[in-house]
Amino acid sequence: MHSTISSFVTAIDHVGIAVHDLDSAIAFHREHFGLVVAHVETNEDQGVREAMLRAPGDSGEGTAVQLLAPLTSESPIGRFLDRSGPGLQQLAYRVTDVAAAAAALRASGLRVLYETARRGTAGSLCNFVHPRDAGGVLVELVEPAPSSEH
Image (cartoon, rainbow, N blue to C red; front, side):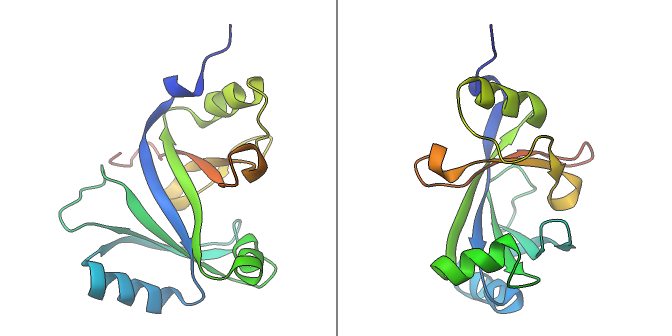
């Protein structure tokens, strides 16, 4: 018997928002919503410059807002912006084991984008469920890095 995905999901990790200009988007969320930057990095593998923002006082347990700016127009975020404009791009679930979660989803008939997990933000592992199999939503599975506070 296969495990179900519910045995791996521990929280909503973050929502991803595609933006043209990372610094302007950070300033907007800081000024209008009081969010603070928890982490910024360039992820060449994913073709993005990204920032994780959190509510003041959130030590890393709550849901983050991830801002994603493309490194090139050919990156997945660049193509998303060309097709849809800035806005909500993904919903990410925090999981205990991304490989096992992906296997459970495949066993239930869903398409998972990568054969094996890839490096995500801050050394996490990630994989994605195809939006056509998830009601039009790109669903990310995130296994935090071992040193992460999640």
